[in-house]
Amino acid sequence: MYSMAGIIKRNNKWVAVFRTLDGKEIRKTTRVDVVPKVIPPGVNKRALLSQNEARARLIAEELENGYKTGFVDSNRLKAIAGGDIQSFSLGRKVVSVGAYLKEWLQSRSGKIQAYERDRKAIQQFIAFLGNDGGQSISSVNKNVVREFSEVEMERVSSGTVSRYLESLSCAFNQAVEKELISSNPFRGARLDKKKKQADKQERGAFTVEEVKRLVEILPDEWPDMIRVCLYTGGQRLGDIATLKWDQVNLEGGLISMTTQKTKRRMNKPIIGPLKEILKEREKYSINEFVFPLAAMKHAQAGGKSSKLSLEFTGLLKKHGIISSDGMKAEGDKRVLSEKSFHSLRATAVTILRLAGVPADLCRFIVGHDSEEIERVYFRPDSQDVVHAMEEISSKIIL
Image (cartoon, rainbow, N blue to C red):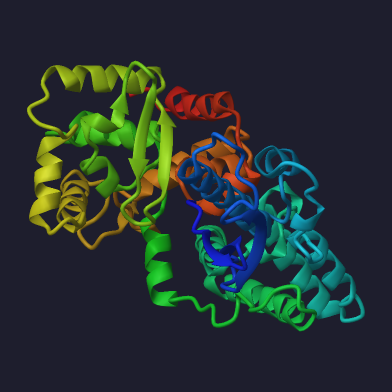
């Protein structure tokens, strides 16, 4: 997340201006003079003014980060500002999400039925955040709530997720009353049950055998698109179809991606099998896209993956992976969930979880996690990511 802090002039001081994650505007002095009271002989005045302004901007960015994460890096701030930094105190009590929710839950212990429901909601939310909920309560915004809902919808029913949201909304209402936050990010959170249930069906995982069969029988670019999708942690169809060569650094071993759906930027390690696929495709490259045919179809559909998705579903039906009504039948009685290209995400998640990859690292790899939570609180070692990705390639040798 880029800093949005600005600075304004007040009484010959640069003042930082920014908003907290819950939208509240903060103004705080940087203690840097706009025009220095004393300009040493031989020093260029214009250069000194520019230097002060640049220093004020850096301080503003540190203060903004402090309000969003709950702490100020005193060493960094001291290096920028110099001297006494006590006046840069946030001026408020910083409360972590986990500590607050656990304290709130204790206050509900007399209500047995409600307590158990609330306990489960808090347990799942803290697990989703990672770091035992150690981040500032003000870091929880509507984007975090939305992503939590989406992750839980893949795991449990919409009714259960709704109950989680109700419990957490109740807890955050009390945080507003205590003036810990200015607004409740869970207020008004609703689930589109029809859409979510459809998404949940769509995300039914392929078995390892089904994936291997698809790679063997599908035409054109589809086999390599499936491989690249899985070896990058189950990335979405549109992101695979529009992948460009300038995003691929074979020498550095990284793929840089900005997801079309969430606009989130990610770097994916290029593991051994993925490198071989990309090197082979590079030999016969005809334009800027790794998958030129898929990219063309994506463009023809107005920059959407609907045309490609329909083509993939048609191929699944043609080869008997799913039935003509979108459901896969085995025998005369059993009916399994609908599958699509998006199901490869569920396949990646299933393999990672069965391999014992922690939930927060799994979310990071697949791309479910909040960018703010990831940036501030979750910094997986690059080798952890590589080892986890290699679990996918070891289970599905394509």
